[in-house]
Image (cartoon, rainbow, N blue to C red; front, side):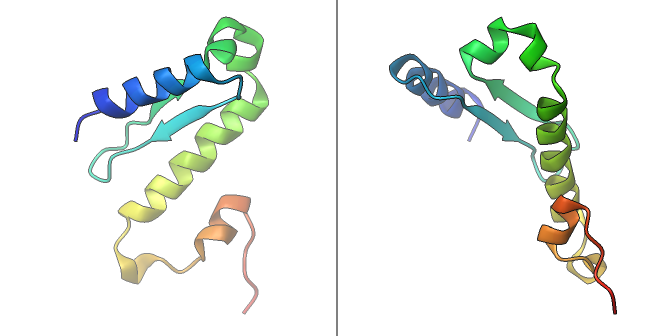
Length: 89
């Protein structure tokens, strides 16, 4: 499945609602992050470059990197990885 269908569906939903949305995706075989933002975020450069937007991208990148690792290398639970917590043994 290409990015065209989800992108079109997102844009249609964006036109019909007044909800803050962002679609973030990363293919398993690629480190590239794809992001579609809600129109109001695109129109407001301050929001687009905000710390919250950078945190969202970093969290998605972390989840994608976790998924790309082989199962035996996954020692930290994903929720701990997202929130930066370390488990004490």
